[in-house]
Amino acid sequence: MGNHDIFFKKILDVEGHAEELVRSSLPPAILEGLDLSTLEEEKGSFLGEELSEYFSDLLYTCQFKGSEIRIALLFEHKSYVDHDMLFKILLYMASQWERCRKQEIEKTPIIPIVIYHGERKWQPGLLSDYFKDLPPMIKPFIPDSEYVFVDLSSWQDEDIKDKLFVMVSMKFCMLIFKNIFDPEKLRDNIKEYFELASSLFEDEDGLKIIKNAIEYIFKSTDLQPEYVAETIGSVSLKGKELAMTTAERLMSEGVYSEKYQTIMSLREFNMKPEDIAKATRLTPEKVKEVLAAGDKGLDLLIGKDATKH
Image (cartoon, rainbow, N blue to C red; front, side, top):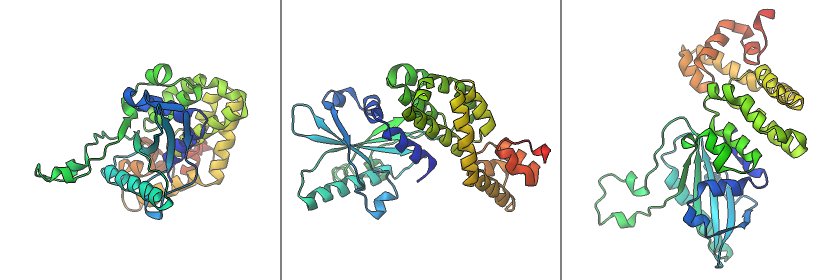
């Protein structure tokens, strides 16, 4: 499971966040029919080996008002364009309903919600769109399964802060999640994001959310730990300490070492810095700096002054 999937799961692990995401994602007509007080996660994995490769298994159920119908909400996150998404969703739903059949329990309608925050434009269509030159009399035989598509790039930061969410923790997490592929914007606004989340520094649950966000930033961008720690430190000394201890732990786990080794290995294949940057999720400028620093490149990646060695 990648860094983005892990952080998305951690976002929904926080009490109240799933309901916030449902409210911001579903059409009003569907929302009006849901009793969100009954929203609960389906614990345990129901995925087989094949489907676990594609899905995070974030399945929630919710009672539909005035009826005995329970609606299943499948949250799925994507950081890249996946043209096979509709086929995978169809597989997932069929797998769930087959499980219900075997266990002789009532089948539940499933509303898939795909949260996308990748760099490329993605305009998902219908399943039938994938079949070229489809005669009209054949089209009814294609199960045109739909899903709710949420493109975070279409959301403005101000909407996240003022309109879409109520919980401070959800606003903070979604701002980080939305802008993770824009390191320059993240760098320029990181202080503002942590100021917004200043109340989270006051208790253990809040500090856990802060820690998860810091780790996600370190693993997914080239923002230097010392810069992140100093910036957060201007908001909270606890935050600065947490950033530094997180960076030290990641260093011991080899996160930065792995990036450095990847850069040096790809150089041997005469790859351009721009191509290496894409493979390592760094900026081309940072890759060039690391290459120029040679055996001191690892120190540069983790924010140390390579000239001191």
